[in-house]
Length: 199
Image 1: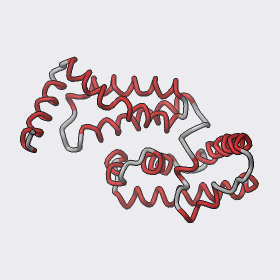
Image 2: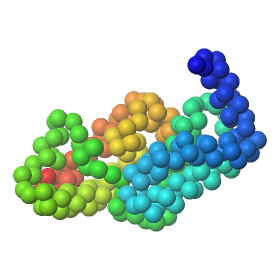
Image 3: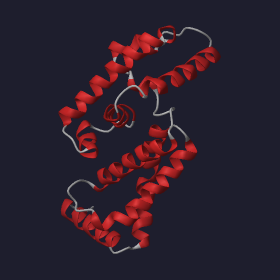
């Protein structure tokens, strides 16, 4: 069993090999992070093909920029930062309106439970209505700020801690909490005002 100091040495050696351009180390990096990077991209883009393209761009950027990594944060956090940036660029280029993930996960607290869980119809009708809600929700996401969208996606959908979200966004934890709170309030207001019958 390795000690903490041995783990640190292994991480330092791994990073050294990455910066030296060792392809086996980079292959290991991709294998360890590809699932979560793809998941992050998919939650931003909500499209499998786009998520695969964006994830590929992420790892190409990691390969090109690994020498610039200074170790000020965890390697995974640095990769998530690149992934978030790539996804935002991807969205801007594609001018997508259908952005981000599940309405159930965002409005998961008890105070919002009644907003997303009122259906008592058959399973097929429930599925249809949920798809309609998602379409409407993507429209609503266009009516909050970019920082609010990013904070909500990373925190509420990808399940990152607010401290990690703050590192990725280059801001404070309190600012992340504010983005999430204000973003959720604006989403609720927009949905209830424009699509009340669906919620």
